[in-house]
Length: 236
Image (cartoon, rainbow, N blue to C red; front, side, top):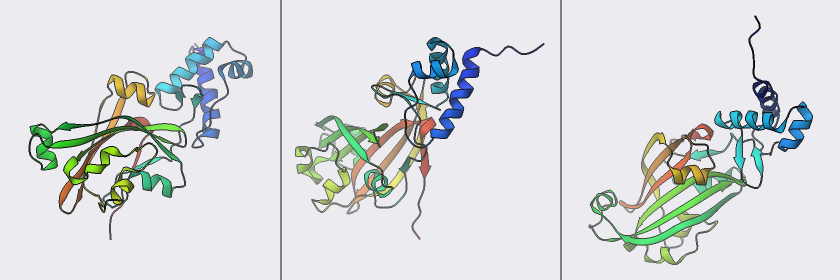
């Protein structure tokens, strides 16, 4: 007896073949209506097929653009050298944009003061940004900087700017000295901002950067674990 294969699964395979042609280009797929006409099936079937592909990480839905093929060549620079994420992506001739979601100053608690090697209740500058590469949302990034080390940082508009290059203007040249990488279930905020389907898994890259033998930035980078590649570079 021939195995029954749902229609949406057959269409899913056809769409996946199309995705392979466009893979790595960040291009949108044809609309649901066009796919429906192409494969001569209902839009409901096409929608189910696309949702199945999205769960597999083969396509990504972006509000206002529809379903696109994620650029698998986008990589976080998670290496022990001086350049940061912004500089690494620019070096690949890709366009990076940053949207500041939140920035403020608060007093460090016991745990944070220990990590940043400052006194408890010392002021810390906090920055939450949404990073995109070639127009596609890529990461959610949190940064914690001891305010006393660069009091002016809070007055700068860091939209579409490199945090490290801004620090360079004040004679501060960060370098990552430790890094931890883990994966966990995504929370509501991460699911919303990263445009990933619930339930989802995020990769968390925790970096500690130093300058002048003191912590200058503690950061957490959250990305969709299924569309992230890590590249390590080592000094010779």
